[in-house]
Amino acid sequence: MRIGTILAAAALLAAAAGCATGADAGTGPIHVGSVSTLSGQVTFPEASQAARAVFDDVNAAGGINGRKIAYTAGDDKGDPATAALAARDVIQNKHAVALAGGASLVDCQVDGPLYDRYAIADIQGTGVDPGCFRSPTISPTNVGPFLGTTLTLYYASEHLRLNRLCGFFSIIGSTGRAYHDGVTRWTKLTGKRLLIEDRSLSAQTTDYTPYILRARAAGCQGVFFNGTEPMDVGWVKAAHAQNVTGVKWLFLTSTYTDQAARAFGPSGADVVALSEFEPYTDVRSSANQDWRATMTRHHVPLTSFAQGGYLAATHLVTVLRGIKGDITRASVLRALRTLRPLPSGMTGTPFAFGPGDAHASNLAGKFVRPDGNGWTVLTPDWIRLPNG
Image 1 (cartoon, rainbow, N blue to C red):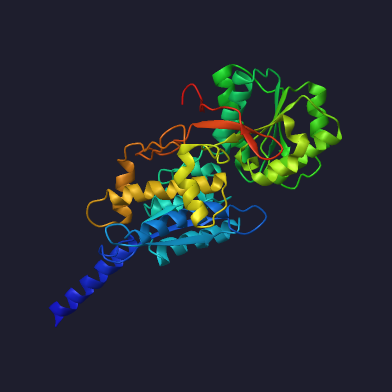
Image 2: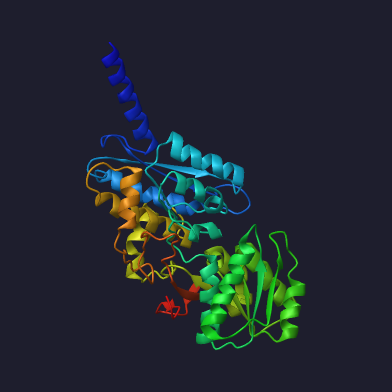
């Protein structure tokens, strides 16, 4: 009896250990999760929707060696406490072997240490906060706002030949230092400095007139502003009301939407926005064909966020298919750390994970401008930093 009891206890411990590592003896579904900001003032639903679409297609084609992917998309509502709960649910209750396709205001900063402690890999669809680019277990598919700042300023100074550049930054949480580092990196690359580097704005700032008038008084040829889509539309409208013309308004990828193009109208003639992926509005691009077909089939809006979610899911599927033996958290993380970079026509540099303490493999972008009906691609070739 005592031997039987010991064996039974050992079996229970083994089962518990399997749950702790996301293992399911290689027979049941492969659990994958994500934590995203799906509700609240600023949301990114398309990333996880796109990831789910990819996984649904994989399942419809027979899964991974006959095993289906069970995908959980947690909503952190842009709240740190909720983000922590959502991450623990994915890890402890859903027993996920990996995360993919997330896009959140707070997830990486809040949950990055948790992912590291549980040794679970996260391929972010859209890395937003600084923690997404400073974790040993997180690797985003996108450029991100901080390197995006460097890339946009580099394009403005070295390609558009704008010598008098200014920057205004809306700071949320701990992003101030990360944006400043992005500017500093541009200065080191070019030897140039911003005439104005104003980090006094917040998400609650709605009157942009004083900042625009300050830029005009300083003689800024180009103004970088890191606002969200509605903020950037408000910025351009305020500039139009003040009759400020001839200044290039330089924005990040969050502005590159169909809604923004329509909202800008004629006032958007001087707008330039970063596209972190192959421009999604370029219907002739062969690089986007499978993405467009997948999103259309699953009724997912065609946006840059959907591109990131699609790439995160397809990269994870590639990794899962290459694993020999059980698919567990340990085997997925090991496969990612030894992964050869994965090229894609949708990005200017290959996706990589590797063994490092931080990951940021998307180091290129293209630039677009609104044309009244949509967006025109300004740079057919990828813009890359010299050390990228």
